[in-house]
Length: 224
Ligand code: NI
Ligand code: MN
Image 1 (spheres, rainbow, N blue to C red):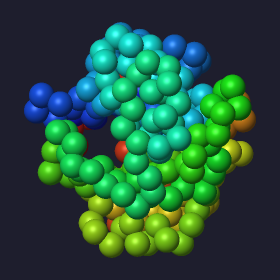
Image 2: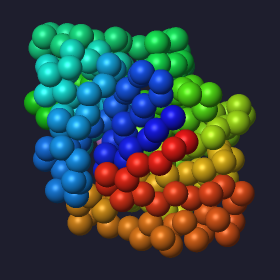
Image 3: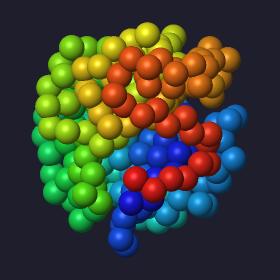
C-alpha cells in the first residue's frame, strides 16, 4: 500500500486499484505543496467537520464523485449539498471495496465553518492492504486507546500539535497505550499555534517505546 502525507491530518492511501483520502486540507493549507488535483479518491474519510479536515472535500467530491464517509451528521450535511454521503457512527464498521473501516471515539468537538453541528468527532481504524491503521483524528489522550491497540496496529497517526489536541507528552502516552509498530505524528507545524519538533518526538518515541516513528514532510510518500 502506498501512503502519501498530504500535510496536517491528511493522507492519501492507494492499494491495488483503490484510492482514498483522509481529512483533505490542501488549497488553504499554508504548509503543503500538494495540489488538490493530485488527489482522486473513490472515498473521502473525515474524522470530523472542522475546516482543517473538511476543507477540500466539496472540491474533490465534485470533481471525482467521491463518497464522503463520516459521522451521520456530516454525511447528512454533504448530502444536502449534492455530494454522496455514507454516514456511520462511533463503534460501527463497514466493509468498503477498499477495506474495512471502523469509527472510534475521539475527545474533541465537531462543527462546520457555518456553525452546523458535525456530530461526535471520531478516530478511524482502517484495515487496508493487509495492514491495520489507526488515525486518531483530533483528540485528547484517553485510556481506552489501550482497547483500540488490543488488535495489533501496524501504523498509527497521532496529533502532537498541542493547543487543539494532544501535545507530544500525551501523544507519547498514547503510543504506550496503543503499542503500534509505527507512528506518524500529525496536526503540527501547519500554523504557529501548533509548532512542535517532530524529530524530538521521534527520539522520545523510539527511546521509550518499541514503535518506530516516521516524521513525514507534507507531500512525502512511503510504502506501508
Ligand atoms: Ni478539530
Ligand atoms: Mn484540527
